[in-house]
Image 1 (cartoon, helix red, strand yellow):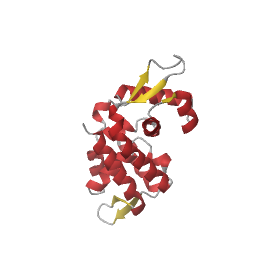
Image 2 (spheres, rainbow, N blue to C red):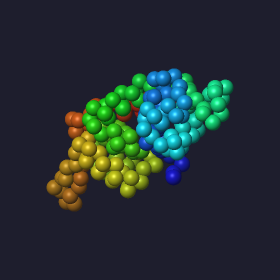
Image 3 (cartoon, rainbow, N blue to C red):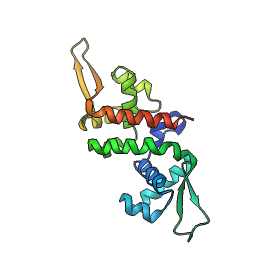
Image 4 (cartoon, helix red, strand yellow):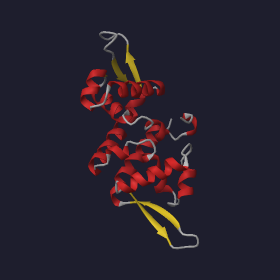
Length: 187
């Protein structure tokens, strides 16, 4: 796994697929027990545990030590989540509206969508705009986004032929929500 220093803040946030839904749930409920999160989100305990550890390491979640039984801990959102909550809920709502939650919550999807809007859609230009992404990860992210109808690929008849990517009208709402999330992650 690459060092998080070389990744975009969005890719760090999406490093675990369940981080954003967990943060949104904790922020909306002002905290929750692990069992409550498992039941509400439909995630396994093991995956939730990894996600919470990631969120605790980043300072987004804190364990409420003085609450209840030590084997049934409660988790609380930190002040950092307060500024992420509205953009996180908007991103999740945009993904749900497009029916692409699975693709939208992958590690590189939001970063690729945000990078596509600011630059021309050539592969190499997108790769340069996203620190820490490999060629393979970018190719897979673009293919997944294209399959979800969020990105369109166009082959330009030139010598040599080249592919250009652009956001589709259905992907614009998700891109806007992703950009707001990226702004909220900046210190």
